[in-house]
Amino acid sequence: MNDHAEQQAAPGAAAIPLARHAHPEDLPRVAELAAEHAAYEHAAPPPTDLAARLHRLLFGTETPRLRCLVAELPDGTLAGYATCAPEISTWDAAEYLHMDCLYLTAEARGHGLGALLMSAVHREARTLGLTEIQWQTPTWNDGAIRFYDRLGATSKEKRRYALPVE
Image (cartoon, rainbow, N blue to C red; front, side, top):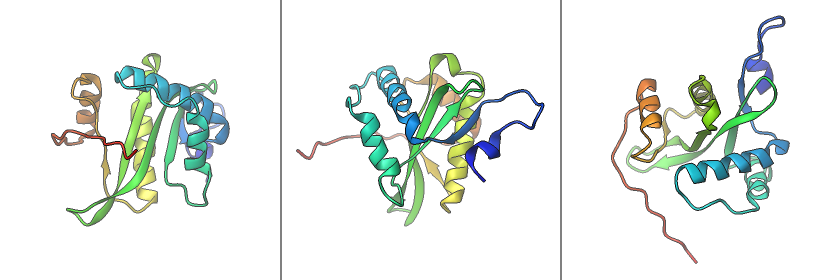
């Protein structure tokens, strides 16, 4: 069953937003959303060729390393995205789904689209046979923290580091 069939309203019902896997033609908008997300988190902007880089990760191999889910409004507008990829926990000796990003435009927040995307990420984990999803959010992002707490998620205090390999 394709993504649209899973979440579209029944004939005659009111149009509803849906979460689905990104298609190649969505990537310019996903890149725009990623740039908004980076600005929101006070991070450096993504590279200007982000859409092409995402295309390679999402569609460049038979088994993509990255998954991208988008929140699509009834009018076809993409209002947010979530990206995730399987990772491994040494301590648990098990795989989990790492959600790298979940972002909604300011106008799209508070309308259930975050829960819609989280449900899609949850389905993705189940499809991959994974039993846990992990992610992080900035400590100052109180709205996201409240949202994740309402979902029943638990948090762990850690700092994330990055070290260039240049």
